[in-house]
Every structure is written in C-alpha cells, then in structure tokens.
Length: 412
Image (cartoon, rainbow, N blue to C red; front, side):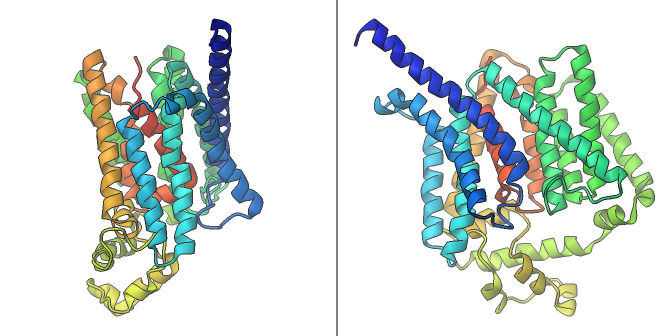
C-alpha cells in the first residue's frame, strides 16, 4: 500500500469515528428525552425502529472506525470480554425464560441501551475533548429537567419529567447532575458558581419529588463526596449535610400532603421487606440462569405465605405483585430474574472498572476527587436503585453505562 493510499484509508476510518461520536451524542439526547416509558408502554413500530436505530447506528460507525483493529485479532480489553459474556448470558436468559416473548423485549432493550452503549462509549469517548462535549450535552439536559421540574412544582403538578413514575424522574435528575460535577473540575470561578447553583436547584427538585429512594440517592452522593474529599472541604460537606438533614426533619410537617405521604408512610417499606422473602422463594426455583427478565410472578405466589403479619391479614401484597410483577430492587431483579451467573459477572465487571480507575489515579498522581468524581452520581444512583428496577428504563440505563465507559477510560 502506498503512503497516499494509507493516509486516505486512515482519513476514512477517522471520519467514521467522528461520525460515530456525533451520532452517539444525538442518540443520547433522543434516548434521554424520548425513550423513558419504552419498557412500560411498548412503542409502536416507528418507536421501536427509532430506539433500535439510536442504539445500533453509533455501534455501526464504531465498528467501521475500529475495523483494522478488529481484523488484526488484537487481544480485546477485559471490559469488552465481560460485555460479550453478558450478551451471551443475556441471550441464554431469553432462551430459557418462562415467558420468552416478554423477556426478549425487556432483555433486548436492556442489552441495547446498556452493555452495547458501554462498548461503544468506551471507544468513542476516547479524548478529554469528546468527554467534555458529551458532558456539555448532558449538562443541557440537566438544565432542561431543572427548569421543567421547577415549573411543575410551582404549578402544583406532580414532577414526572416525561416519565409516568416519580422514581425514574428522580433518577434522571440525579444522573444528569454528573455533568456539572464533571465539568466543574475544569471550570473558572464564574462557571463553578453557575454549576453549583444548578446543582442546588437539582437537589431541591429531587426533594420536591418526594421519593425516599431519591433522598437515599442524595445521601449516597454526599457520602461519596465526603470519601473523595480531604481536609477542610470534607468537614464543610459533613456540616452542610447535617444542617440540611436537620432542616428537613424540622420542616417535614410543612411539606405538601402528597410529598409528606410519600416520605412518611410505612406501607411501602413493609412491602419492600416482604419482597426479599418472596425473592428468596422464587430464587430457589432457578438460581443459575434466572426465571427470565420481567416475567409475571403469579405462579410463584400460589405456594408463598407472607412472612410479615400485616401482609397476611390485609392480603394486599400478592395483589400488588400480580399488578407490578417486580421486586423494586435492582439486585433482587438481577439474581432472581437474570440469574446468579449474569449478575455476578456484571458486578465483577463494575468492580474491575472501579479498580482500574483507582490504579490509574495512583499512577498519574491525580486527586481522588478528580479521578472519582463520576462515581458520585453513580453511587447515589446505585442506592436509589435498591428501591426500584432502575436499569430497565432505557434513558437511565444509557446514561449509567456511558458513565461506566468514562470511568473505564480515565484520561490525563
């Protein structure tokens, strides 16, 4: 091959990479705003085609861009091997599901907007400039959600942010708050002030949504910031967290009745505890590959006796399970519906990425805050996910795995 033809070939592959990045950014905006309810109310033909296209088009350009690397049979990264195994066991979960059609839809959507996105983002977000553009787009999404949430609150409307449930609404604010946190490390004084003000507005919106899971997520973010910070900054954050917590308790009686009911009622807490016992009951049936993602749980209720007395007396727990057919906990969903092998493999991959990021920070002598800032919203999101099946929502799944890709590819 001549030098000129080699340069032409390199230019072609570089153009494919640039196109892939542009399409990935466009797809991110589309998925964040327009795919929120896809797992609950399955879209029509055009909706399915658009969501599928938003996932596959960036992957297509990425394959073209990395084609020389692929055909050279270069040893793949540990992360990509993990993703390939996750796809394999995800397909097995579909094949051996008790309701194959239901699991095909849900698992397919999960794999496309999660692991596939991670594989693409880990290659496409390969420079500080691209990561900056990506988080700039997420920052604009965060601002939109902040203004929309403020409008809904002032209008006495339930804050849903395009969703039909307050839990994903709370999570989308939490996850998009990663943008101001990420960009703040390279911003000037005025930029940091603006980002801090919007972060405070985002926190107020999450509190106004009135979900205890959202408050738990905020607590997780605060804990991670405290862990990453040092010296006076750490004590300042601790004192502010205590003041906000104390103020929240003092003002709890002043909340609107709808919000107060969400935060104080004990019924949902009792049902969540009961779900752990039900999960163990179902898990014993098919512990390795799982029963299939999002399958109805009705058949397992026939020989299940509620363990909490109030549930046995009022008999509302089983009715709720039949309607919702979920465990309202991402870990329970993983082990029971996706299977032990799939879930442990997934957990191993996440822990491997965190360890890789930590080692990089040690070698490059970065501060823990700079290296691990993306962990702040991710840890908060994980704690929030212990209250519902968060990763079944395409927009949350997309953002979480995009951030995981950034964490897997730390840059100077």
